[in-house]
Length: 153
Image (tube, rainbow, N blue to C red; front, side):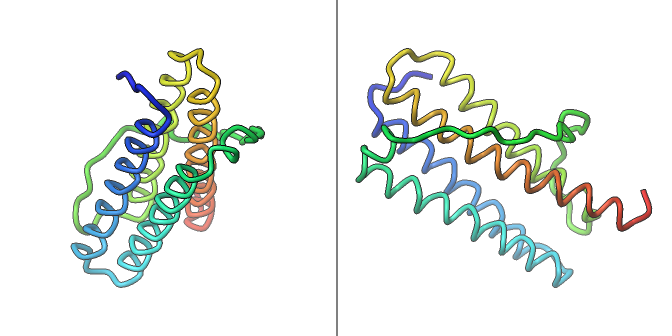
């Protein structure tokens, strides 16, 4: 995957976030359990916030240049889970795992892209995207852990 500019990177990342919005919105419509419908709507709203963030970055290159990365914990829970396809009625822990794996793949994608560039402006943007997706992954890892603890596991 090659990008010619920061704008192309942003366009790609925005497209990925829009895919996630559509994915979770679609799941909210397919799910019959109201609490899961709500969970999917909330996930879609989170991804929509990312679309806004990335869109605003395109208008503010200084924000990218001034970005200071921070360390995001990785509980590595998703490392031990297999990727699943959504099935109506699947248990909550599988739904959280599905979301976690999606975020894990996004982190890996942006890390790989960062490793392939030496240009500082795209590198800073990829690092920002890695951080954002890492935060989302951590959110799902904590949610998964809390859910399992609540189930007595």
